[in-house]
Image 1: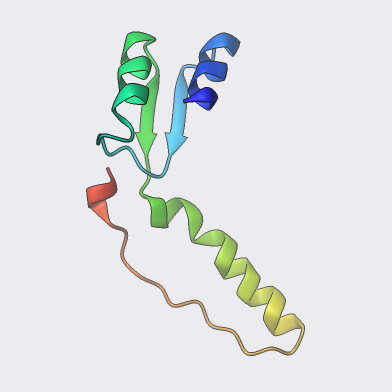
Image 2: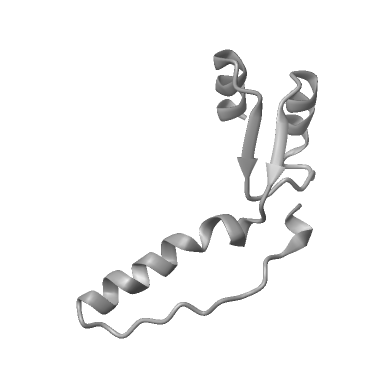
Length: 79
């Protein structure tokens, strides 16, 4: 929650994140966001992080190492 608190202190009102699921771990953060009018835009964990391993495959191939990114479907339950 420290990131969201810092956002509010800086006047930032929109958070783009991978997982917006409300559970026991995230409930307090979601309540804080609602109380402080923070907009949350979810993109799924997979969809927001797949680009780093895709680039790593390019890096490995440039070193002559075989590498393959195996595409998958995002887990919409993250949202």
